Length: 50
Image: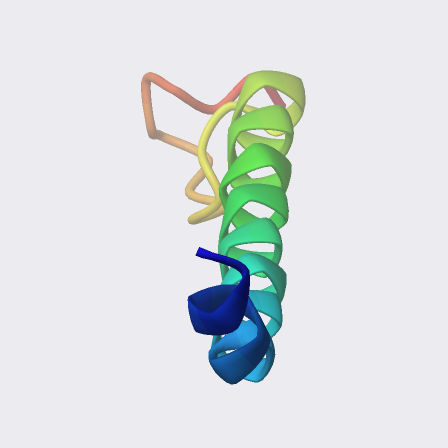
């Protein structure tokens, strides 16, 4: 098991970094949507709160 981990540590770390970046991007999209309604900026959009 340790041999496999040491052979693949770079792949594991890169995969974890990419997964963290994807999670943070989705989290930001969800927070922006909750805060501003939709991101299109249409004044007649029912999702628009402005």
